[in-house]
Image 1 (spheres, rainbow, N blue to C red):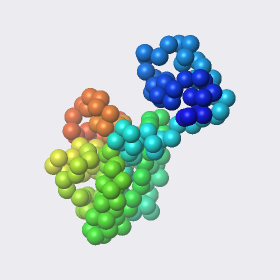
Image 2 (tube, rainbow, N blue to C red):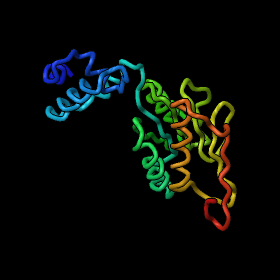
Image 3 (cartoon, rainbow, N blue to C red):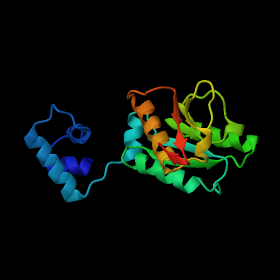
Length: 190
């Protein structure tokens, strides 16, 4: 960031304000800074930014195992939603083991994830400092994406929906309810 400031002839703080979109910076200064950013091929250090904002930029996804037939489609839907945000996904598996479940949950909280999408009803961690969206089951204190019995396994759309719900929760946008029920007809999501 210092190199950008020198190139643009401004303070480092001004570069920071421009990159954050501060409207108090003049158009002329903003253009100079952005030209310097392009000329130097500057990329924002997300770790430093998240540290200064006391955020991790991470969403945890916990599944029973990675070999479930529905997992790739669900993950693709979740990834499609999260990719267009400032967040990244950290994926963990419980392997159906309560001890591993507790260990993986601990790893996620140690990394200060901003939310967790939990897909293993038998190994749910309980109370959490981060918001949790459960998929396929309901638990007190958590948001839920529940599938009607005719739906079968989670799908691409279920992953996308769980991702949108989580993003709304952690960014403070309105959430329709704590529980979203997906109804299906003949195996297709409506």
